[in-house]
Amino acid sequence: MKLMRLWLLSAIVVLTGCAVTPADVYKVADTDGKKALATIELARIYTEMAVAVSSDPTTAPEAVAAFKAVNARLRPTIDALFEAYVDYKQAYDAWVAGDGTLSGQVMILAANLRGWVGAAQSHIDSMRSLVAKWKGAEVERLDRAERAIYARLNFVEVLVGG
Amino acid sequence: MEAFIMLMQVIYSSGWTKGVINKILGTALAIVKQKGPVETKIMELVERLKAMPQGYDPTEDELRASLAGYHAASDALDKL
Image (cartoon, rainbow over all chains, first blue to last red; front, top):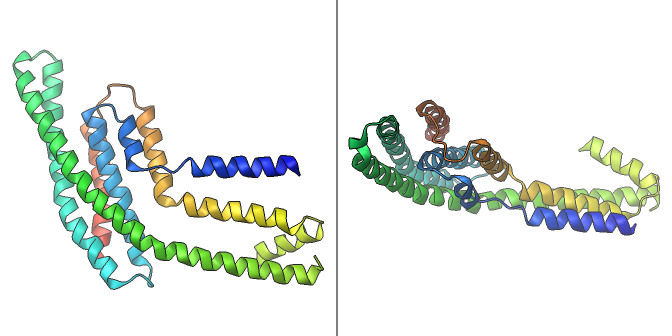
């Protein structure tokens, strides 16, 4: 029994320490290219979550409208980020291949790319906040399900004489 | 749900205490709540980035594939 308690305690400690955020993604992205990829992927992840939350019939219409409004700003930013990366990558590859005249241009294009990454991050943060806000309803439903399971368990306990 | 209840009945009748089962159930529900789809996808993204060599810049095609994934989600949201 002591081992079981220790195992459960360890599992809870590990689980509570493992919450991941977008900041964890940028910690492991050591190049501008990886940061660009991470940003587009985070945009995809939170937009997919927005779709999932919006598709729930119990989600309020204003939530769906809010998701769409944020995405209307996010999409052109992500498209611009992609174009900025294409420009940067072409110049960078040519510079690495030996075209020394491109060093200044590479720096400018890298700064431009970082600017779009920053702009996209603020929209992604907005989407993330909205997802967290409206996912609260989902958590509430899980809580209700949990209470229902416990109620059933109590019922079973009475049946089996526990 | 019925299968779950039946399993619980078997476990109860096997002599397990309610406290132990409640702890296991609580932990399982905590996992469901904490490790939602967003966290799982972010973990996968972290692992994907970690698997790339240090100093590596993804190819245009890699970014284009990610962009297509985002566009698909964006289009789905617009259609709602």
